[in-house]
Length: 305
Image: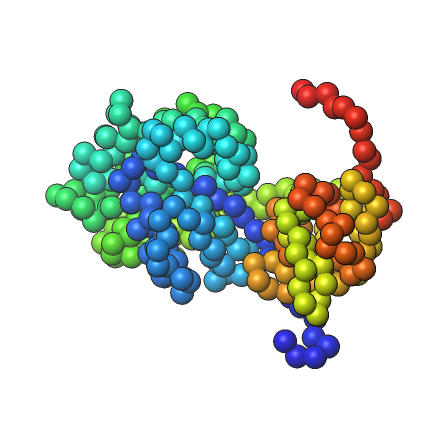
């Protein structure tokens, strides 16, 4: 970055849970989508992939979640669904695979119920493997999948309008831009366009700043570096912070989000920042940083609702 240049503002972030029955093609779909958008696509397997929309203004964190029974049980005990702004359901249109996901041994219904129970309200459905079998690129097969999955989502409590997109990850069609000539009957958005059309999530940006500290370390020539997450409010360059519990305080010298230097970071951003004037020994995991004028209030108990 040139001397004196201002770091860029952070793009709007959308956190998307990628769900589907085992064998539905979640990993292949994400790899193909990332490839179409010019992003890194190797070795995804269950990880979180980052994607910036070519349309601009929005970045996605696409987190593939397991589709087997044990994996879903682990997720139910965790908190990922509660962090997701939307769900991307992947349903295979391949002969037998759609029915398997909806059958007694399938996990499509369970994934939908869990996602909705944890507060996920918006969804996009990718009907994948449209190129498979004798029903390749068949409108009737797509409609069977759409109707079946629509019933599952409504039963799970997804009441907002859901976009369905017929895609083929293997052929790379209907993913990012341009619709497949093999499916002239489909006139809707591509998968990325459907994601871009999701409404912007409401974030508590105007609430008092709260940054949870996950770790802290000393960097030679820089000083104390804190790593954590913005829970509410905005973390800005130059802000005077107070860390609780305790009385450590310092001025924000630099902020990084996903390795990029930025002017500010908002709710849900994972941040690395330098609080000038704070010794690393004064920072501990579990602390919360607030602006000096709106400090945390310490208490001895709380009432759970």
